[in-house]
Image 1: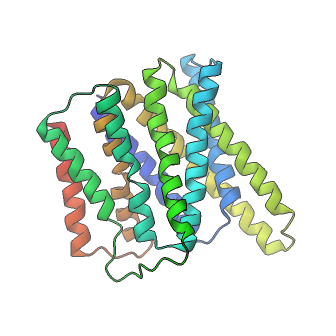
Image 2 (image 1 turned 60 degrees about the vertical axis):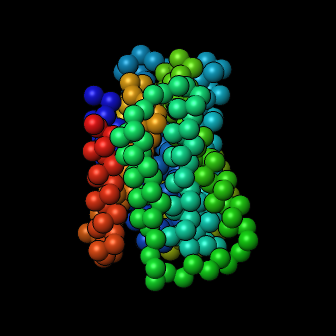
Length: 286
């Protein structure tokens, strides 16, 4: 069952990632978008925690939530900063290497046992995700040396989000209240940033774009909540060294949706990469 949950988490969270890309495509402001995302996500986790009776905000849960929330919030912000000073086709695959850290965490810290076929599947998925965004025709020049710092720190923060859930799960904590606390942290931080930006915005056009970004963020947050909740459920039953690469395969859905709705054309090279992802998923299931 955990394998199905991991695949579903990739699909649902893939829509969230695609909607984030759409927000950038529309050139809408980031902080109101993230405020909306973390607001609806927080409400979702709060409702689910109340429904399953796990809303116990102990110090351990609050600490875990801040770790996950900081990883999600600052990881997204640093990733966007990296895109401003460097190519997306290098930024995205390097940030996604946090998957490797989670695999190492599961195998060497928590003693997860994998076979040769599973290792091959993990290798195929991670390699495919790393090269999927690469475009030989894109300009790879780095505009600023700070790009390297943005990418490295974004990768580490994303590990705090995804790997943090594995740590809290192994510590015996319920991940729904951890995620609620984390998204609440993201909402408060993004709201603070939005409030600071409001003081610098005076024109009506900027206000209209801000409202649109917030509403779009609310929709995105619903899928973010669903994807992360499914990911947490899969971690509860399955090994992180397999669940995490499956979850990271949401890049596959983002690529397909971008091709269908953002007029991005898929090349033969990209089609081969997507086939490699599917092959890796099959290997993990064997």
